[in-house]
Length: 133
Image (cartoon, rainbow, N blue to C red; front, top):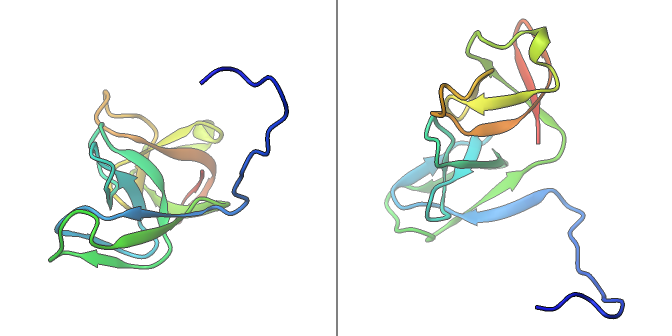
């Protein structure tokens, strides 16, 4: 496409909820981090560097007996959610990236390239880490 030469009516979304097709034989739990695999299907976040974390699951999605894309999962990206700290995140990491260890745990580092970025560390306390998207 060529650059604009006149104004255009640009479509936009104000919401922070998106649905993604779920990978075959996959179950996602409500409140867990959701990632897209290399084929673009939703899976639970984990320490797989090719995953792209998209947000957290608003409700469960059970495609454990289905094929790729048989169902969708609704995800949210607004605000921040509390996740478990693998023990590596301190106050010094607030404002920096958090990396997915699994669908409920984050770390301060990418584990030498083994973990996908999960969001930005907004705060932490004794019970967990607040991660925003």
